Amino acid sequence: MALEHVGYVDLPPHGTPGGFDHAAVHGGRGLLYVAHTANDMVDVIDCATDTYLRSIPNLSRVAGALVSETHDLVFTSNRGENTVGIFSPARDEAVARVKVGVGPNGLAYATDHRLLLAANVGDPSRRGSFTVSLVDVSSRAVIANIPVPGRTRWTVVDAESGRFYVNVADPPQIVVVDSADPTRLADAFPMPAVGPHGLELDPTTRRLFCACDGKVLLVVDARSGEVRSEHAISGVPDVIFLNAALRHLYIAIGDPGVIEVFDTRTMRRLESVPTERGAHTIGFDSVRNTVYAFLPDTHRAAVYRDQPG
Image (tube, rainbow, N blue to C red; front, side):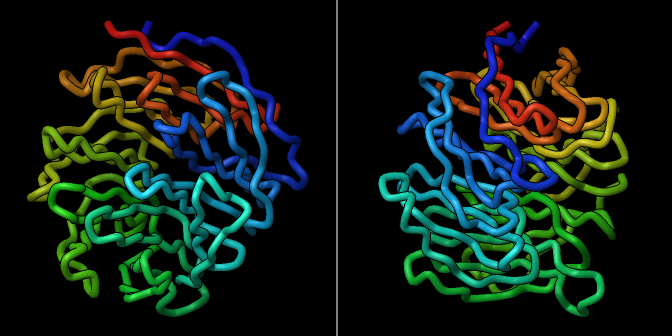
């Protein structure tokens, strides 16, 4: 077994129907930030003690959180107001808001360029609303809104090349934006599976891991877009995280409610860990090798420690 269940963190009850969405960890501060979409808040967990600390309110339909440890910043995608939030963990009551495209969801940050990409899910009834927005974090201003072929999902950035990769659900593909020229799409890689959703990057091997609604995990060359291999998974995935130290990939699947763990050296599935039906999102603390699964029915986080094997 890789993941050992060690406990739970109770979180505030849902104020409206819904649950949680994407989470991120500030390893240096030992803080986890998770989008509590049902409450229009980001909940904060102390990773050293696995306890709930507080919530950051008034983030309408917050869909995700992202951390930059280098610049000591937290970003949020606030889908209900079409903004991204920017704040320091030291002063999380002071959230700056920047207006972006329709329905911001996935977030990625190019540290060297101080450039935030917001992948906007758009509105099918509004022509041209499928976009990605590029935000200059220093000036708190949008510098470009780039049209994309369809509804976006998650996004990652390659720190070495400065290239952003964005999953597009339909037509299924990964589109690329270069932070050195953030005004257009630099490339697009067609994917051979329905609904690219969760996305991760292994910077050592230059591989993208693309988890698709078609119940398949694709391993993709980040430079050429070539699909190197395909691997069956047990359901429709959402959030995925790479544990680079242990070479484990964690895939959250809300139905039936599991975390699937793959060995990224062999691409063998190591185990499927039950969580709770509807638990489609997870967080990962790389400092402590801890995975948090967010459980919508019981409004808490299940805590797992990964074990070297």
